[in-house]
Amino acid sequence: MRGSRKILMALVAVMILAAPLARAGEDLCLPTDKTSSGTTCQLVGFDGVLYRITTEVACELFFRKIDDGHHLLNIKPVADEVTPYYEVYIQWGLFPAVILGIEAGGTNSWILGTETGYAEK
Image (cartoon, rainbow, N blue to C red; front, side, top):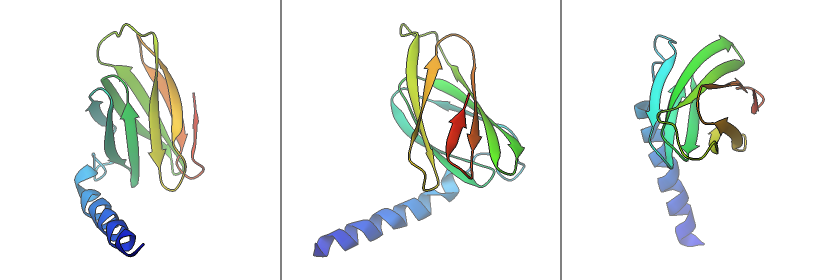
């Protein structure tokens, strides 16, 4: 138990120090063009919200601000995969991760409720 506090503090310190490096166009509030590479966890900051995104295949991520409480996320697979369906996990704030079902071929759009933690297609 004694060492767990040190580990927790180290984890918090790493997250605090990594947050500024994860910014993605927040200064201009422009749509963000990020490409994730297969089965990775990536931090993307957009409009003051830090998203943790885990993908199974490489895909392009485009964010756009709708209003103060909603962001539009477009996800497009980089290459047509053999699997016609796969999942993208996205988590922000204190909300649990949301699983997005993505179909290969084309762009999948989701509205993210940044204040309520939901995703709607």
